[in-house]
Image (cartoon, rainbow, N blue to C red):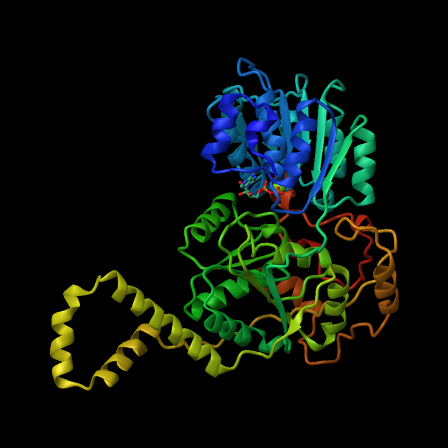
Length: 529
Ligand code: ADP
Ligand code: MG
């Protein structure tokens, strides 16, 4: 760890860093900033949440000449959320220097973006699909770009952006600095780097343990139809400050968010079918605490940086270990403790063990929360709220009434009644969710990534042993039949009408890159996003 003053940055940049509250640099910043400041090409690898944005943002802001009136830097990000997040950080870093930057992403009014472009930003932060749109419309020209950053490169490739990225990079002058940042380094990233980076310095900070040790990881074995009740009890019992619940499909997210609202929880859903405005709204409410449960799909929640998430609940088991790590990594951030619960149906237990093996972390089995525990949890919460008010001494105007009530009633009975009122009755609404197919263990080629590790021993065996092992049989085991009603009902049909606007949330189109083979009866990829 260093202090930022050791890097020889401009005072205005240093001041911005200080204002942002950064005191010491993170390990990836330590390694990347000096290399980037020399002007060299760079491959930076570190886990999510380790400060990669500032690792490239600081040297970039430091380098740009403020008199410049052309687009001299291009940052590519996989999703609009990440583009917005990076743009916010770049904006803060460049504030005192007066650097102009502009985010460009699908889903936002293109006319508004064109207006933004007229202000002559020096840095463009964009998603590949929408960037290409502008390039084709000639509203963005890359002839003067001197620095290119590929942020979250593994995510971009996972989302099928390889062709777009290549097309864009071919339009940028060869005489430039290119930096590629990624949490993992699968083969396809290395190929991309070979093609577009010149003699790059490889800096990496690979954690000893794949998943964060501060996260208390547990799983609950249950049947699909028990999941919703279990979820409500878990929320009641644990009383999370902020919780993210992961569902497998967009339909699942919609249904869950609505079901939770019906039961009286402040919950909202986040997935790729929402409009830009809706998404921003949901995120704002989650950040400012006006909702405390966010229901999301993997892609919608990836990389999101929300502090204070105390609980992650995997309502559906994720398909791959990397997703599991990404999901639970939304909690336990900035050295805080977090809890991750995963619901696993009996048929998915093998797959859970596979995830444990790859992440090298044991996931403790816990029983389904009982009704009594749920009630106790809720009552405890109410009592805490009451005591908080007592401590803050904010109840004076109620004292008169309290005295007169106490003259007529027993104090214990009276307080119990008030607590009951405060706790609120559980709303007994019938909830029915469309069941999801269980995840089953997948064949895994031995030559694929595992969160940045060479997949030696545990990999091949786990994948290999499981191949073809007890294939899922649709007609057994109490699930409502899949296929037919899945594609038509529930309003989950994905919208392809938005053309490019939906691009940034496309499902992963190139699964070969991840080394998984998809069975043909998988849910349509589109619904996963
Ligand atoms: P990554 O891209 O590696 O996932 P981010 O760049 O999004 O991580 O950073 C995660 C969070 O850490 C952000 O809120 C960012 O502002 C904060 N952060 C980055 N660098 C520092 C630092 N040196 N000190 C304190 N906080 C930092
Ligand atoms: Mg990042």
